[in-house]
Length: 595
Ligand SMILES: Cc1cc2nc3c(=O)[nH]c(=O)nc-3n(C[C@H](O)[C@H](O)[C@H](O)COP(=O)(O)O)c2cc1C
Ligand code: SF4
Image 1 (cartoon, rainbow, N blue to C red):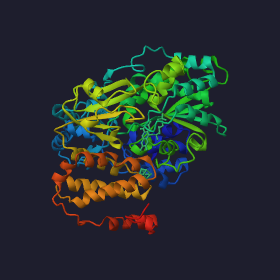
Image 2: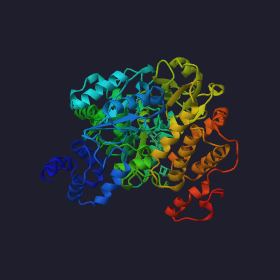
Image 3: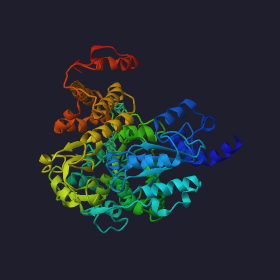
Image 4: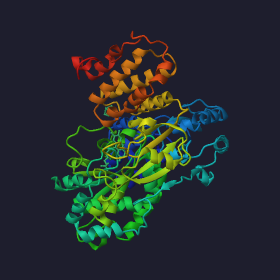
């Protein structure tokens, strides 16, 4: 116990013994002890004065916190469909065989465990895995052999070949943001020279809309936060980037981080916020040290801290917080819960974060790319900015392109570019379908490749996964269905139960055991999820699957054993347990009811 306490003391002191930082404390403790043992849990709970149940609620919620031993080397293979298309399943099998392991089980000597995890954001250089949260990309059988040898020799991670951990940017097409020559501080100085109100006016003129998915007007969000009552205000950069197939924020954080931080500072200038957080997904924790170094440089250059750029009253600083493997934490209210040291369960909205956010104070939550775009507005003014793209979708958009194409990576275009153009530029190989917007997005067939990337046509947070016409789209459907079942936070019944049922049914169809009745049940579940889920995760969980079932109907029907409409499975009865848990048995809690 003494050694536990002595290892924990500096961690706890580093966070000022603040229970709000519980998630960060557990992450750091796990780095030291490999898992959160009952002794570690008791020591943290005792020192912080929180119930051990609160720690349990976090270890049970976050996939990358462990309350059972997982070994000194914790290997997690990225399980996006693009990783699978590049051979990840065979590579994992190879590793399991070499290490004489069963998936998800700790090795007999307690050294290593191997499992899958949701997309790690390396789709342009997959198949990929994480070893103790550090990404290893471009996996081949040879690299797997080398990794197994290093593990067997108990080689510390810091002594593994550096090129294993190299993550490349793969910028294939640069435009206003990725292609601009930029001198650090110029955007902040330009904003300060204008003043807070004039900067907000430029933001309004720019009609900049959020790049995180929903496309909300950024100026409106900032103004609402500025005008909301409250003694403090906060700026949060949403760097959770968990949408399968998306990795553009990773590159912005790796190579354009001053633009991200300056965008946050400009938001602070406009709203009057004095503190900001970058919520970085745990899978990107390898970026933490360079990001901290960048923050330190910017403080030295008076781009952060007090009297920024000499402006009286412009005081602002940024702290980095890490997630721990929960896609739902990208949803802005779940993210705020997580920042407050709790399980990331979405809040009921309204009120929205702009008026009631972090610790109840007015809070701006913006995507990484949105904040970078705000620096452009500061530099060139709102009118010039609005001259790019389309009327409703101004400026440029960065796409993360992966899958069956010769040049996966980042492509920046003015809004309005057609899917066909992107496919030509990336060297798409005989594309039979494109998944736009990640697992929560839409699946488009060649007849729709003339559609344009824009909020008024095909909106997207940035993912574009290419499927060659030889691909089995049922495998893609299965992968997405399992993703949502795994990532559902369990807070509301339609999503918790619905996503699991969907995953089981798609498995059944894929295995050739489905009947036409299942496809009808899936359609009913689609409606339930879309209409009754509490947050965007459940509401969008069947968008892609719905598209695929409709657009690739013959492929689905070929797999059905029976074209019988008789139920082989009673869906309403399957929901009985969920009704019991939710304490509901009213008409609306039954299938077929008009909810
Ligand atoms: C399940 C779910 C996951 C999300 N993940 C992200 C994410 O990783 N990054 C992000 O910026 N927004 C994400 N969002 C959207 C955020 O809730 C929010 O709209 C966004 O951060 C606002 O920033 P913006 O206005 O700059 O787009 C997600 C939403 C949902 C429902
Ligand atoms: S829809 Fe799903 S992820 Fe969202 S709150 Fe409900 S259970 Fe959680």
